[in-house]
Image 1: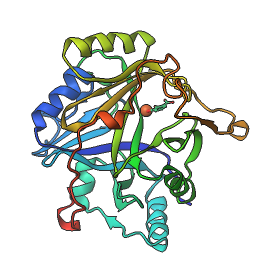
Image 2: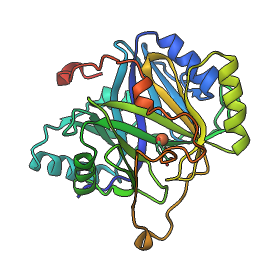
Image 3: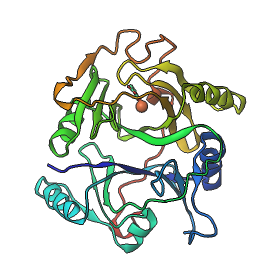
Length: 307
Ligand SMILES: O=C(O)c1cccc(O)c1O
Ligand SMILES: [Fe+2]
């Protein structure tokens, strides 16, 4: 079993790189890391929410998620992960120095999960010592979780909980499984979707007020609100989903549960048909994925040109 230590980043293609960066900074409130002091790589922009060098990278090109990345403990753990994935029949790609540099990690490997979601495992992700300089005061404190689409959520849970150390924290019937890799209620979620993809990226905010201030700000800016403000009965978080450029759904949330007594926690099974199973406040619920435009996911690329 491969132990995931944390989520690392999401890497996404952006047809309009400048527009994606502008939205991520001025609307979402992330920091654009690449400045004159950073030897900027043409066509790649790194966005930061916390001490990680970045948690979101945009690569100029075809819109859509390129990879979702998790941290493992170190080079030894990464080598073991590579062997284990290969023994389970996965084709594993090993990133070269330029790939590692672009991601600000020591080493990385990549593979496609059984549903076609490209996953990267990394070690030595760079930490920035200086405080985050948010592009807007949205109150973001942390990269919270990432959510993937897969046609069969139970099968996805089986994959993530047997190949990896992910544990189900809660289920929303066959519509979603929320999984933890540490004390946080979920850092990885899988939602039912016809095809692989990135359902959303989540950022935690410092205060309840931030969710509502951001809601008004987004409305003022004409940003499509997908759902919320509402409250998830699973993590207990107050949430707001909105749609950014390049088909990327962002979620702000405040107050995610921590599971501190690992042995005592039993996953709960919510009924997706029950009103309130996604939003305890009974707001209009539309599964975020249904409001997303279908984005073209880049084909799995040969190793030499993997972005
Ligand atoms: O935070 C949650 O519990 C949650 C529930 C359903 C869907 C989500 O995206 C969530 O983050
Ligand atoms: Fe979420």
